[in-house]
Image 1 (cartoon, helix red, strand yellow):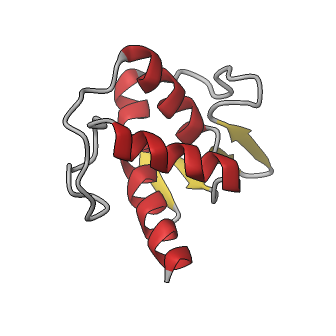
Image 2: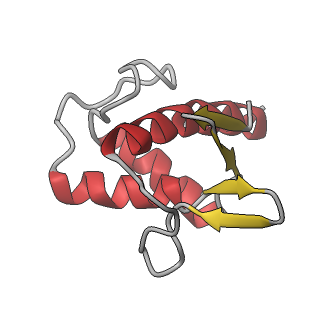
Image 3: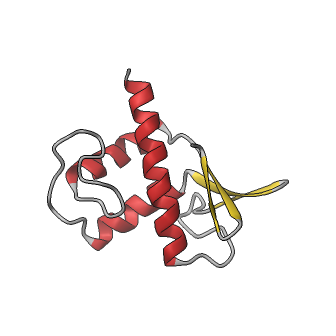
Length: 114
C-alpha cells in the first residue's frame, strides 16, 4: 500500500529520508503514538502519551513524505518549511493519512530490516 484516499482525494506515500525514518521510529518507540496499535512494530513501546509538541513534530515528519496526486501536480501535504501545502486540510484528513502512512512506514521498515 503506497497511497490512500480521503473523500475522493488521493494521497501518495514516499519512503522517508534515512534521518526522517530514524526520527519517526524513535518517536514511535519513545511514545504511545496516537493512531497506531501499541504493538505495531512488535517492540515494547512506551506507555507515555505523546505530548503535543512531539505529536506536532511526528505529524510533520510523516506528512512531509506524503503528497496529494493532482494529476500533473504533486502537492506536498506538508512542505519543506513545515507549512501545509494542500487545500482544505482537516483534522480527520490528517488523522487518516498519518494512520495509513504509519502502516506504510511499518511495512517499509520491516522490508528494509530483513
